[in-house]
Picture (cartoon, one colour):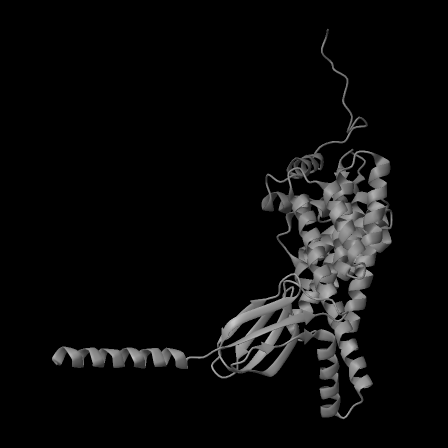
Length: 400
């Protein structure tokens, strides 16, 4: 009797368990995704998210654009269609029951419904809403294309920069990358600056005079374009949001002017080069000593008349005022003054005031510098009798 009761209880437990399983019921969904042109979309992601419990079902369309799934909890869902990583449609409140739900997604029809709903909410005509959405989509497409273009340009600029830093530099490859970047975004000052700077550095390495001249000309034209675009952009943007951003903008433009000045000097536009260096110094006072030094070097290399030498000395005085420890400025000032020395009746040199002090200061700051031997030679010459053969090799007095 006891065994019979146990069997009855066990049977009852089994029945209860089976009854619980039978109570858990699910629905199913199937459908097709069609694009704006009426073509089915294969490989699209169709996500079903339960608005009640958050459970998500990720389905994917086959080559025919079809999707299907069993075992979906009944409830209200948000259905999202994603193609190539972009959401192309989203619908809320899609109800799934116990029966199979056939849910086709027509993107064109969905768009028209969205237009009607938006028009109703905003009190606009369907045509007005459609035009607004089309304009918004066009702007979005432009922004996406611009961002893709920016990435491609940055890749070109980075590749060119790496070639410039190589040992030895690959100027040809760098110029090609910068040229392609410029062709992709010709309205951006930075691509013109990179291209012009590359030509400037490449020209210095050329051995053929014609190639050198051509590349310096290219550098000048490209850097002038960079300056023009940079100034226009800053005028359009107006005042920078804070002091740091404002100074950064000025420093960038100063760098452009500095390189433009170097290129201008190389193509014989000395006055323009001096003006460019002066402009750079005004825009970026913390770096003024370097810009004034470039101005002084440009004038020094002209080896011109007394007026040019005075301008050279004035430029070096500006360098020293901005940075009293800039050794090269003292040498160039001293060398320029030395060139202005006059010869006394006894054959010795009479240098302008400050010549000796400038050369001595250079040696004190940089005793083994690149100009050390020249500075020592000048100082020695100031204490020696100058003969007619000064600067030439005297004939040997040794007997053969």
